[in-house]
Image (cartoon, rainbow, N blue to C red; front, top):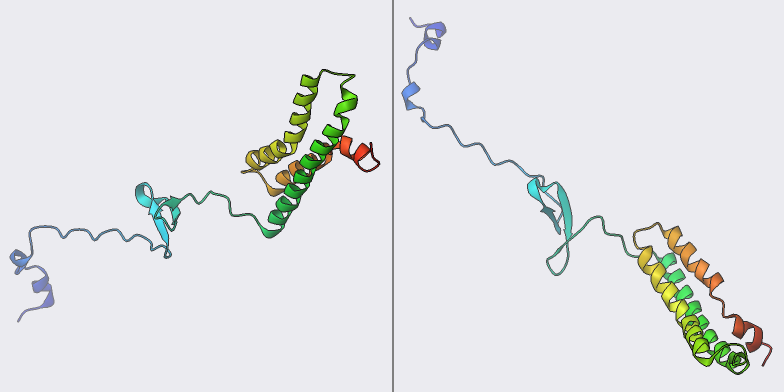
Length: 160
């Protein structure tokens, strides 16, 4: 009669086992949502696949919100009006400024004033890309206050 204890001490059938260790199963990677691609060594960083097949950086800023887009459009329109105001006001004052400063100096100052709103808009747009939204708003509104075309305001409304 054989007991279970005797079976546990025998080595019958050990030769039938394979001599090699089974290969470890491939490490299961966590599945990502459709359109996402794991990037980098061991996939610590994840990026969004664009339509052209490139992988975008998840740290990129989101597109402008609707209120910010409206503010940028309104401020851009105000700066365009300021540019026209500087041209009209500057050309109106040109005859009276000839007695004070040379013509070349006046032309340089006039065109610097005409370009100032566009340069201000571009500088705020580029320099506040990675900043908070309120910093961009303050930059745009500061330009609206600083770049007022005073020659047009003082002589354009009243007359020359």
